Length: 56
Image (cartoon, rainbow, N blue to C red):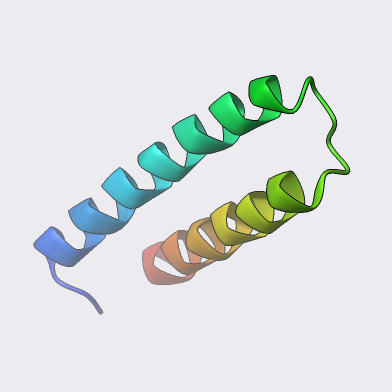
């Protein structure tokens, strides 16, 4: 299991990615099928999956 600092860093990365995704979605005029939006959304999914796997 990862140590506390690694988990905290992962949470920070999740929060930063979530904020970037929201900004990008606004920039792309809410086009959720834009390739950049999809790519960043997939990254967020991977980070969340890693978090939930660690917390199990």
